[in-house]
Length: 175
Length: 175
Image 1 (cartoon, rainbow over the protein chains, first blue to last red):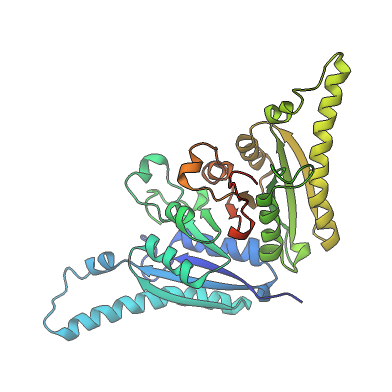
Image 2 (cartoon, one colour):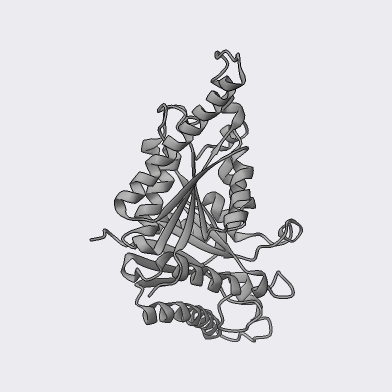
């Protein structure tokens, strides 16, 4: 018999190009890699923990054209954010359910790299899997890479999964 | 049925303190983590690939007191190096054999970080597991960390396994 399941945290986010509520190419890649290469047929040996961190600024940006006339309008906005996050997580939870892998999923707000490391500290997974865009050194100067930060600061083993060349969009900043 | 086994390369080296032919604390830790957290009971789903890189200078150092009088003396030295490496690998291969995990092991000479990345390119594992001493920023200035180099340059997903506090020797440079 096996002991406690190996708890694998997978950080997931929305796609910048595929439209709501699609998961980013890199987070889908990280998830599929975890299933195919780590979990394999041993579905009871693992538990996947999906963390989606919503960036408050980014989400608020889409409400630039909205008109806020009452406190309820803000509540509506917050609910919409929540629903987007839930739909994203639904994809991953459904996939796990189909193949019989136990999982949990939750949403946090904040700076993804900080929140991921904070959640690792709190939840203490055995492994953190983070997708990454595999940007070159030049591009990295302009976009903070969450994965590099997690490799350095997360208090658990971390593996970053690069997108394959075939999956990389024309603009590699997109995901 | 499952497809091809997940091929996990584990970089292993000798202990600096425990004496011949013991594996370093960090490479044992990386190996045990791989077995307990990844392979688990799914022994047929994985194949472990043990790579031991011997550093020519370091090994030669111990022969400072030797006397070389004929070409055969050098051959003897080279054979001794080889035997040390084989005894190290024997430990890992025996453990895998006991629990029924398929494995392969081999030795290369050179700069560990360069050789590991080169072997990753050649062998194309699904995952590279590297133990690390978990040194602080100050100590890292003086000792090149193989794991950091591999995270940056190896052409496959890499996970580094830090030693637990309980396993860290008095001088953290030791391993």
